[in-house]
Image 1 (tube, helix red, strand yellow):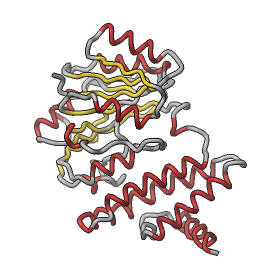
Image 2 (tube, helix red, strand yellow):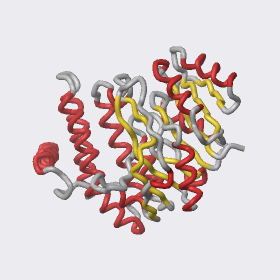
Image 3 (cartoon, helix red, strand yellow):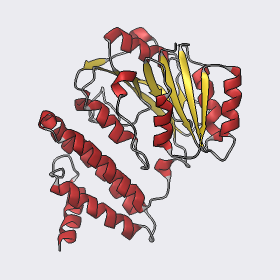
Length: 316
């Protein structure tokens, strides 16, 4: 039985896929399975996955009609048999020691969640430096939500590919289907469960700034609606009295950051989409303001005044 299940969704990434799969094969930790989900990719992804599965039984391939990234991950997770789960995007790559170190930290601290850091770039190849496990610095917490600030040295990012999860921790937690930017609502749903967590600033993941990725797609109103769906799903979890302090923290640290990203998308959009995007963004701001999620704390003053102006204009 594998100790770690790696879930790899694949769609239109033939340029990067072999690099991704080779990084899995290069792991110094061998007790893994890779569940690769070909999400109806129209390129050579399916054939590449089948080739790797023929060469190494630890690669397991699912071919399905296109259902989107969320469902690809959800369907892959259903077949996972490892004690821990790692989500890897197919245009990214793993440091050779990622599983060895992350799994080792989980075992050492009896942790349900291990968080680490990433290298960012758009290189075909990444420079790999050997990591000395004995020199890794860590922080252990039973309420990781409060490490969600960018000011923290031991910071937790809201993506899923810088985390190793105990399988049971994810029971009943699926990615929201049909939306972009599905990582952050999933991450904050996990953190709300207050898992015992080990955090290290060590970089063990290689992120590719892929121009074809969802995050780089041309701005459109659906993106703003999807952000809204994600924030509302988080609010529904954290609005309980037991998570009052955690919700206050998100209001000061998470909400300002996610609204900044949306405002930037609206401003960068073309003349056709810009009015529609601002219309959706204003609806979201009014809703969040009614929920008490927007205050001056945590926002740059100029952005906060922009939000208040949009909210005021919607009410007139």
